[in-house]
Length: 167
Length: 381
Image (cartoon, rainbow over all chains, first blue to last red; front, side):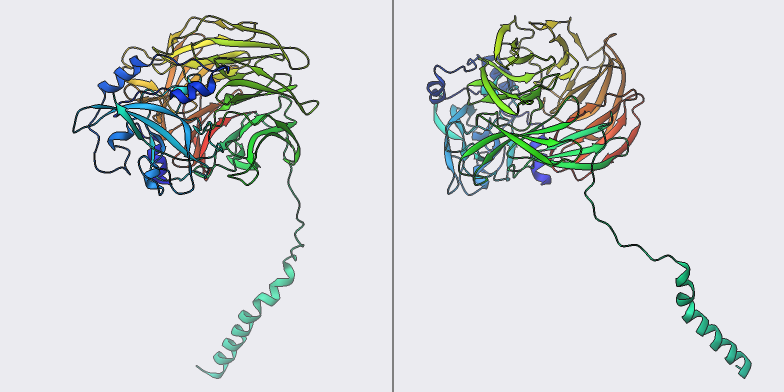
């Protein structure tokens, strides 16, 4: 538990991030009384300025390069992988998106942070990135919400990071 | 040893052996224990409610009821998945706003308001609400009770945003009100609530006597979330909401009218305070009677808004000036001020599962209540 809270509460001011809804969520919410998607370039620029070098080797640590905007228990510590759900968990169709720079090839990759849902919290390897993280009135940038919208249940299990494309 | 001495020592030994038998009749026999279930008195100003989300297994939340004057646990309430807590303004009932799956982590989702008697802590009734309530690491203003205790309001996100209205008198769900672009519920009045909007504005919804929306007004933004967002858990005392921003600005909004009214903003940072920022979970608290505000502070850079606070800074709300800086023994995540004449600062240390207490007047450390699980929210009667 100590490790859990260390990770939960530590300042994670070393990763760049940029989040937005996937187009799926936009489509899903069309016509609903949704909160507007908002410009976040300014926060992304700030975040990049404080970037530190991430690691390329260990996807069970918060500093792994793809996790620059991850927030939650890492699925790679829970029987899944950096972009795979553990057995029996369901990938959420909704997510937020980050832009992470690969430390070796120098390219910026668009990364989708998809939660795995349908089991109770894994409880291992919590990473709590707070760069560009916003309060609840900007929900698309709020990482404390349970991001299992559209999944069979809203029971959160763990978080993954999926490369979508090169930016 | 001669004969006489041997004789004397034998008598002495006999006396020692007989001693328990000789003194026993002098001690009264213990009566049999009579087992009862305790009840609670009327909440006192220094009582404090601590919500434990039960991380990392969040299916059953827990609410601790603690007497802050003696630092003793008075009792607990049980809840469901990422529940929230409220108390009736007349202190006769307590509410847990719960989500349940029929098989704990699978099956059909049911959201309910669970009603407890505040004296016995017995479960009394439940009101089923649409299974839409915001599921989040506990945030206080995801639910609220109107000042007269008639309606309980539950903020929803599917992710479309709305508010479910429960008539507490009739104990039934009466309807849902859309709050496009705005979330959470602050309810300082009898027939209205306020929600925080994505553009930095406040939506004020006026209710009729049946709990339906009569009027909705959204004023101009009060702050710019792109430049300096305010934390989403203000200290709400009476009809005033005290917001603190990531960079330390204080925005006071009067929520009593049909539209929120802002007082001029000011900063908690003075000359020489560079590098300090508000941070944590519940970052601000207020005591209106004494006119004081407490803000949880740490030293850190941009985006360190969830860093634990090392100090609580006390301010005179009217003079907008700092009264003191109180160094905490253990860095805290959430703070609260009791509403009595001699307020206590309650500081939740999440990692240590404990709540520390300090005198707001001089910062004196008063003591600690430990073994509180994962305490995120702290509030008072």
